[in-house]
Image (cartoon, rainbow, N blue to C red; front, top):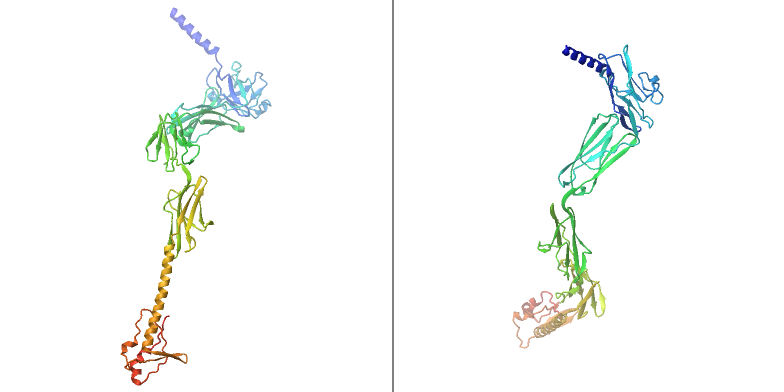
Length: 503
């Protein structure tokens, strides 16, 4: 008896529960949306009795039944919402979701769903009211990225933006290059979420850089969020800093090693161009600079690595110095003077002859570290015995007097000329002397006639016809008269051709 009573009580309770909650609805109390966009109010409903696929009519209204927000017959919709609302849910599947387009500021609600079942019942879910939070601007997207990365590693950043309109999802734009992957999903509170994952390789230039994600909506509405990147990297842009790379010989030079790195460099080294270690300080000072100074470079080190700077070469300036190789050389063709000058910057060189400046010299580079020049001057013989080379630049001047050494050449030329004249004179005397012994030359009719006379009355031998002298001899015999036929035959060969004597 007691068992039957408990069974009857349970059945009665179940029947009462069924009839106490016959009409149920699932809607959010508030939906956020942006003015000018659309909003979807998610809705699911239940009704008592058997499931029906047809004969269902869904409506949305405000607290007053007369203020219709949505109706299958558009003419019954109040003017404020006419043409802007629609039922996007499938009532046969118990989906009563509502969409409101071109949302206005006063489209706040509250809104109530009403179901009408043909030939059965109709019901408004007044206890399930929905309000819309109309915002002037979209919500700021959310950005997440690794707090700290190393240069060369892959980084993935995630940007998320929520929205109430599935047909107007925001477009997410990154400020950094990379490969974005975008996906969207519906949330339970009438919102949609768009997520963009950006992957890129971190570089030293990314350190401290603002990574920005911008959400672009319709009507040109934009919102963005940003985060600073923290990238660890070895020193870069390592440089030697100095006041000037142009310095005067004998002065002091101070150099500082600078670099960019994260974390900052914790040590430095200085080297010359040969790789010799000079110092392990950030600042290196060099006293009494020489013109033969070599190039320098520095190295910066941190926990991520180290890097060297580009070598820096100083241009050391100094006054001119005329080299001992400077000299004048005299030749028959003239005097050849060379003046070798080493200076920085290049000197102005002038030649001075007897107090007069001559600037017609030629200049050639000596190739000695671009600091030496060779100046060449050509002079005629006998012009001067002394030439001065004067070199000057902004740091000083130097002058050197050079002997032309031309007296020996002039004496040789004089002596050679006197010897030639004496030789010609002696040759002429010899010619006349021999001619007087061998012939008598008589000028007749512009011709030279030679008559032979002999002291002993004997005819000389044929060898006496040859005039044996060391220089050229010219005697124009012309027609020659001999005493008899035998003399003509014997000496006629002496004057077969013209003979000239160079006096």
